[in-house]
Image 1 (cartoon, each protein chain N blue to C red):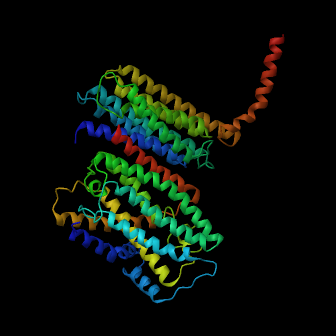
Image 2 (cartoon, chains in turn red, orange):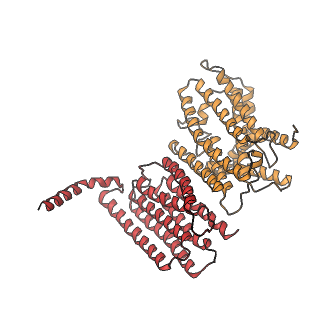
Length: 231
Length: 304
């Protein structure tokens, strides 16, 4: 069993987690799946780079696994606990069409992988398709799910895709940058978790569509602005 | 045509041992539930009991109703001839037999469905509609999965595809993914629990059992036997896909692997049935599309 085989298996695992995310029906399940995805991503750089385990790789792997595999899911689970009445995911696009769209996106990602090959041929055929698929899955979750919590999960999947791209593409990205991005994401998820909590406390639900009820506020604000401009 | 004695023995084994699988599944469920359970041979008793009775036919039915179960049984028997067991070639093996297998199963289903429609019962019509809806999702998953494997093994015949692909330890390759998809299809096609509950006759959510409500006596016995054979057939398909490369292995090892595989598959079905409830009807298509996604991923892996 070579490093290459393990890395390929991890790539396939990440693709499967994307399908699971698209088909998930429970918020708790979605959080767990994104945790597994983050964990797999954390392991990925250890096996992709042929030059073996360096201190830099090890630090990044540990950081990514702790943050994406443990800390983020915990934060999300905590906000989920606060919303004791919310358990199932609500959709604009249901799980079955989502899965079909997923199959379509995966197939077209494969095509993109052919058109946009990696500059240095590391030989991972599925790397670029996996990256595209993960990014598009994240974006799709953001627009197709109603709850604010699922939008955070979509954001995490999107970020996972970008990170995976970095793993394959940049052989020697500066550690400062990677740690900086991780810190950004950490703060992002932290703030979003607090926001979801605040939204749910204020409005008794976390449906993004329901935020339209804020329109009154928006209208009065617009009137105020137009009055300002008249003056 | 040279008749392979071993292949004939496999067919006889399937004909004799198929109802035993039902017994193993039921025994597993009983043990999981802490009961002693019915005898292992209960399915045989049921079938013999039913064969001794006489059939009652509704006056609204026509010859289609009576043809239904006969075509069903015949189609499953043809399917048995196509499927290789324990790594030796099937009695009927030719390029493209995997397509025939899928359509033989389709024919069996079609006749059960039109027999159900022939009774004119709204209840059975509902079951027929559900069965057809789900099979519409099962077939692409089966075809794409078999396509991936046939591409991998450079063979268009089931006898060349099964037992050659090699599910190896850690790597998540195409065979492992197709096995996952096939397990879901196995449960769906045999009307086992996450999709349909074989034990219920009362609920409005049942699918397969509702279609055979009007069959009685020997007809129902043959239907029961037909579904046992189908269980064996699809089980043999699954075990063949989910197997290491056995082309080099000795005959006893291959036979042992296949038989133990069938045994474990039945136990796995029993465990699945006792550990989860049937899915809501609306969730079933989702599960089947998920299986389709797995097959598709396998095809992508093979092609990419």
